[in-house]
Image (cartoon, rainbow, N blue to C red; front, side):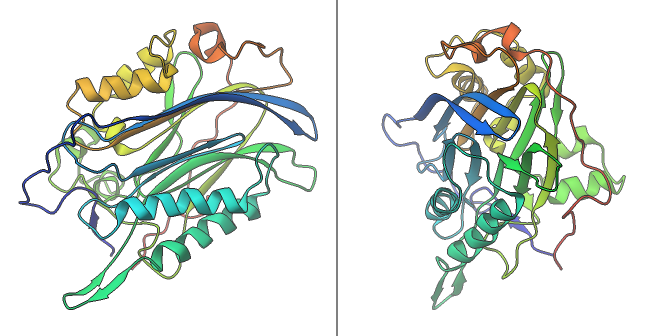
Length: 319
């Protein structure tokens, strides 16, 4: 089984943060034509090096209608280059301002795996393997009359959540050692948060010649809200805290994503922190001023959610 730690090598002294680390923010909106009408999408996005690390190995893509977070493997070769390579590969494969197909998204994931593997170096001490997680959403035309969907995808322990104005629901399932123990009934969810192997992941982009992503198709309808984030957020701010922020009004200059990252920083931010908040409206009366993501009213009435269940694509653990 692949067993990578996504933090610095155990026993290593944490690197001191750079002076005045600069967060990267993105805030925007777009109207995406679809076969069943136009989807208005607004987003806020922010990534920060955190309070401990010296290099930000997280990277994000916020390009309507594709949103993703990649978290490079800390303690491994070129984690920051690996996460950027995923973002660059998705930019090349998927068109801005138009739905993709599920096949195009899968091709971008597999191509990203090839590009990241090419970053690995052979040296005197063996192969230094570059790797990264990826999690995100993309608006896709599923074809065969199935309509327009949000395609959720992930490899590793970065996450996608859905928010309906009252409840936060994790759509993706972590590819991690502790998640496997939870699934097997060996430990509880609370135990997993404190387990010594909580940073060990079991799948990563670049780890093997073939990558197996998990994917879900959620029908695009009405107003829907998603959060895409690295584990630097989910390990510092619990679901209740995230829900309180999403139910707020976006006090930070970088919108709700900025509020989420600030909450992680206040909680310690031992890792890099990245968050993207996406609100789409398909067939409804979307606001024209681009501020709907900052109001509680703009976070209500999300469409039906699809939970991971047995038989969905992916889910296997590589040997």
